[in-house]
Length: 222
Length: 393
Image 1 (cartoon, rainbow over the protein chains, first blue to last red):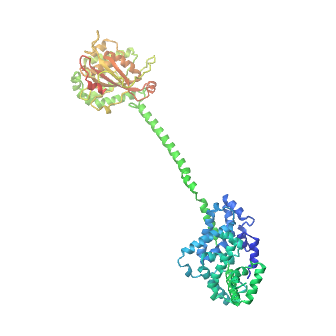
Image 2: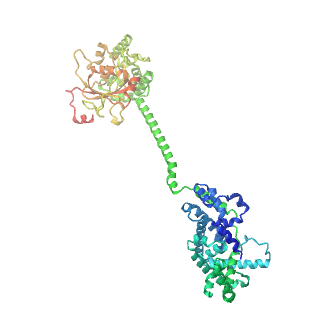
Image 3: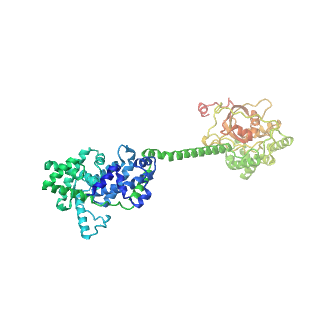
């Protein structure tokens, strides 16, 4: 498991967005002003500088989009919901009190939109997980058989995530996919850290029950 | 530590969030318990598989689309702005509209006033030639009507006159201008005309020379006319339409001032010309040495008339002293006072009222042509005023 290095970054950066700035794209590098913190950007947005909000969008678009995408399992739906989440954040940016991180507030908005969409989708559990052509192919494991096997496993994981309760799926995605710290989860979910641990354990047990038939126990090495 | 305790802490153990003691206790249990170790491996596999899910890039232009919507939202007015936004546009438009309507109203009002000041005759007083033409036209229009409804005293003469002769007579009578300061030549002309008038009525007008000269104004400035209040009229009311009234302007005598003819009262009052002054004159019995009522032409010839016999013709037109009669006289403003003095020979002015809607100052300054409505009432002992006619006034 490679969560140790990520956790170090999380502990060093309470701002969730900084977690994903370690691999910024070249395009975003030229547009995003890394020197500005989230609060500075928010202050400028409130003063009418629309470009400051663009900085925030470029900073958080990938984690927000992936969270939504993994919760919904649909790329187009995820793009639409993530866009709605950002627009909702912009419309209600005056209501952001600043007592929490902007990323926490933004994740909450995105999760609420994704949960609403999941509930409105009648057959979302039967939804076929599309083959994600945008996923990068690792050069180290460029083995067609292994790649196909991993694709199948990813589809199973996605299907299992879709079958979970939204809260369970969210806490798993935020902890295991986004590598958020317990403290950040507690702030985002507005629950104590102990409750975060218990909910996370329960959610993982539910996911394990769904993935157990497909998982090779020999591959797991704690 | 039993299996339940290990299962409860297994998630924290995999996250490496346990303290050292708890972690060693779980590790010792897992090394001895195959079931718990299997569960730990399965749970670790789940975490790893979720963590190994690739991070998907958002669609191309994702941020641009969001920002486009953001700018669109920003350009939209807020609720407060939406409430007042129309006012920012509408208030100037409404204000401009009100100002333009006001300007238009003032312009129309001024235009209307100008037109009223020019009514009923729009020609300035200096253009006496044009005035004469106006009188000539009106006299020609009324010549045929006057020939049928003239007084009994003129019926014989008028019956022999053709329309052409009437027109010529009207033209020449209208061409005579009023000269307050009568010169010797004018007096001579007037004497000639009156003498001819006494001989042959049809040729009397033709003998009157037509003067196109602008009348000489009195060297002394005329006193400004002070109009009385409207409605201050006493005396017998105006005659009704059933009365056959004579017409001024079609008679055989020359007129010292142009008289407006055709003013029969057969028209409803609303169609009457709007007079500038209304005079009500009560006939009086002839004074000593004054035989005008019986023979006005002779009386005018005897005295030195200031109006060159115009009042004589007027008296001839209204010779029927048993009925009230109304005539309309057109003359210049400067001639009005002289005209009133000449009316003394006809009777006493019981009432004088200014009914003009025009500006008196404008009339007096420009010496504009005025229209005088002259109501001649019979002598008191000749006619008894009825209450109905009193109310009509």
